[in-house]
Image (cartoon, rainbow, N blue to C red; front, side, top):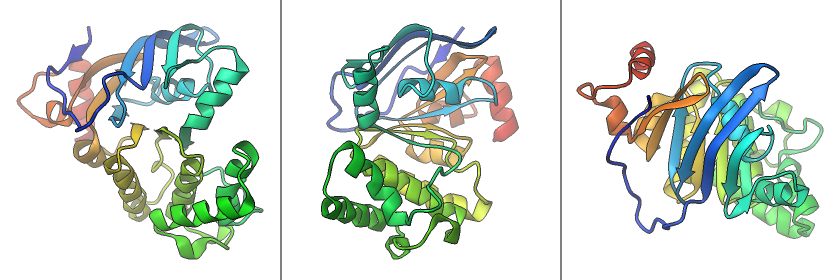
Length: 260
């Protein structure tokens, strides 16, 4: 049985209608039932952090939101558009939803600036001047404008992940999805990426973040969701998860005892 905290932290000027609605989605990989009747609504500007053990369905869940994985049952609606087999709907949702992965997935033969400008020029049909101006604004935002003419192989892992964030932001998305964005980084590089994500959250970006960085979750999340065996087991504001006096679902408590 799922456990939910009663109170959730509210942001000012939050819209009434959710920007993401997920109703009873199910997903199988062959015989493996990876997502089991998952339901969730996310408000505009809300920052949701998903935690849980490996294999719990966290990454699969957020990949379903922009159709990188296809769910077999249930409803997903993003910014008023239902995710279906209609490729036009899929394309529209992907235009409005940026994603940052564990691996940086940058094009190694292209400069940092060209990596950031490619999608706006190809998908949004921006001029080169417009795209390059936006790219430099974003590289300034993530703190690496001086790297614009370098190639990904000349950058540290933390710098490459910041380029990946800038690239996702270049499409001017309403929603950002992060799939364990710091898991491939050396410890000293994690903070620089988390700082960029914190700035995004404070700017009002709607974010879903799969991570084991509990300090980030405590500081930035409006809501934390614990998943296990393809289900949402427990959810609530950070204080619900980090208060030692709160009684948790046994599986949640076991997980928190291991990582805190």
